Length: 307
Image (cartoon, rainbow, N blue to C red; front, side, top):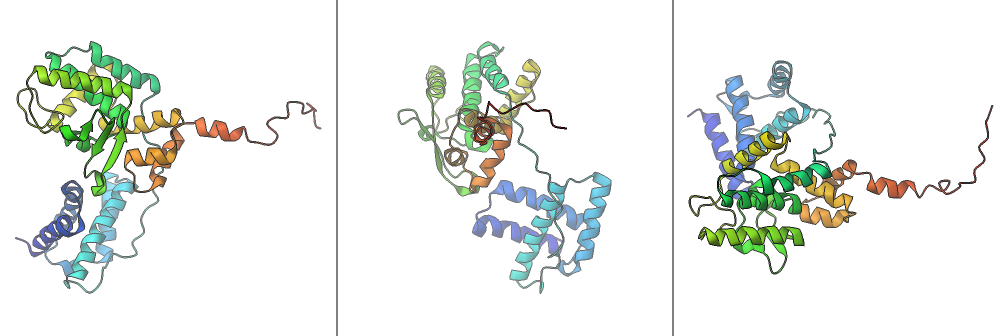
């Protein structure tokens, strides 16, 4: 094996073992670094310098129209790898420290409108499913996304013991960043989940996982989720995906005047600043604040025409 590829392989295992990075996180970083190494035909770690990296990034920007976010991710992933190489004594210093990170576009999260969210939930009652189990399961999946803001991987990994109907909470174990959290459930979600559990008993499902396959007791595969959302797009002409429903949950909660701190806890955000991004999707808080303008209550202001 190419020496630098072998070094990179050890770096990936090191991050998963000692840094607690998830395999999913490392998969993205692994691809970025491996792509750079292969493109530049690098055999030895000492070949990498700042000029080489800058030239590579500029070339990718021109040829492939890389976004500022893609460039940022590549710089950060490569810098982390090189910092590891410094730590292990393979190079003296990180050669790409100082490469500027391009200004990132501050785009708003994409969420469904309130009426489209309701239309999506109603669709699960009338859509054409060959098996009733698939219909009830689809409704439970959509409801879980809309009423808890859960991530796709978190939903697929839910255990039966995590969905505590009597306590009215869903427990997320080892979510993004290795964090556990509890999300309260409202009456609508509980009712839908009870219907799903009754259907599971009807089909004699016995599994430690909450969402299971139709044909066996295995954990639901992510391909089933992709097919479900493909069906939604065809039936409703609605561009929707699991993370968009997570954004929709946050927006709906803010529309209902949910406290931003409580929402941050339910979303599993490490920094409340991440949650405040969703404030840009609703004007409720702005409407409340604009009424605090000291002249806003002066209905008796004279309507003069100034020269």
